[in-house]
Image (cartoon, rainbow, N blue to C red):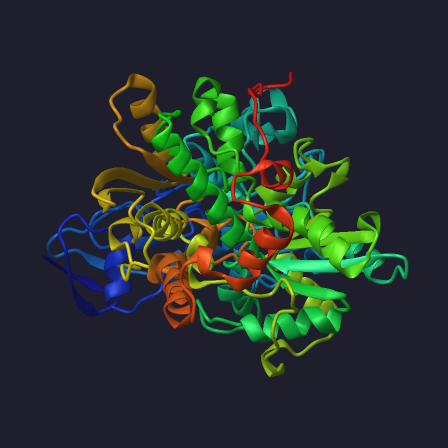
Length: 579
């Protein structure tokens, strides 16, 4: 431990800590802007400067290590004046349309401007002008709002190992862009949205489509149906000031019904179908010596990644559609037939934690008989905006239930939202199918937790099955290299594009850097999903009575011809660059 003094307070901090970390121990807040714990720790913006006695100039607290006997001052007149100048300079080259910005009220630059009482622009002058890139189906880039903090670059390059964006040009012309300054739609972007989660301003945001939903809700000729992913219910409340990880399922359903949707369904039901099809496919590959390991295909960012980077390994990918696409196909076939509704009149909206789903729903493969499985994807944040637009007091809402006959789901489906959840749900069903028993083993804790890669060996029907669950594309790359080199001996692989799984998707509520360094957001949301699972009456997908009925009356056997027509798809090689 190292002993130092910060603002007159004696602090003991572990050797190797930064001044910023030591200040946190003492309960002293130092402002940051470019800093993002474990992702971007470079000291570029200089907002976290402090004075250290006996040294000239300022120290950058996010990278300056503590030393024995160090005396630090965080808010001397010199420090405050310097921070104010830095902030003024950043704001002088920043768009001033805060009232109409998607990040208004949740912008770190805006918060600092309020905190430091910035009431006017001290350094007016020429501003850089950038075109807005809105060609991607998932992400909009407005770099007139970029502050060159490079947090998005670090998330893309260091966390995801994609490197679709970086700083280009020099001096006043410096900006964050792609190779050749082309659209994100034309380069190796996977649409994961982790850059949006990292951005402190409105320079990056999802491509909003809620206006289209409002139009359809008012159209008397449209039957508008909505489905909600498991991760949405444990994050939506955060947009209304509720604690991180609060399960708001009932209030969410009530809000959706008040918005005017004709039916409110649960994507978890689709997840149960995914498990039935995926577990069946896995067993068939094992028994018939098919391509192993089999890799899950629920994450569209991951699917796009393997298509661009490892096309030779595509035979390992499960042919199953993702849960919301499966569910959309069932709504426009089974449900439409049962209710006597023309499938062409059904408008299917998916509320997702993932912005890559916006890309996925537009894929040519996601159609049945020329009809799109899903017509619109909105994020958790977009749903919150719709609720606010409708002037609904979300926290005051009573609880409601999902609509039947497609509203029942199991606990296994709920855990789809966290890393390892798809694997665990599939194993629960696979073991019962292979043993022809209702086995009491439910929890496969070896694939739980926040580690980026979780390896385990599970025994099913006397057979050792080697599995691995990876989240984050950097970790996916490691697993792919193992498989490509022939060193891997896994039979089943789960991969999620976002670190931590869907609960940390690009469309989830954005947390500022202070919250991210003080709170384990992933764990709180994941724990909420596991609690839903534990409290569920049915915790195995194949025991869902709605699922059993639909297979009996409509689909036939899992993995059969009808199931393949509706619930399965194919993938192919995709170029990294269209330039």
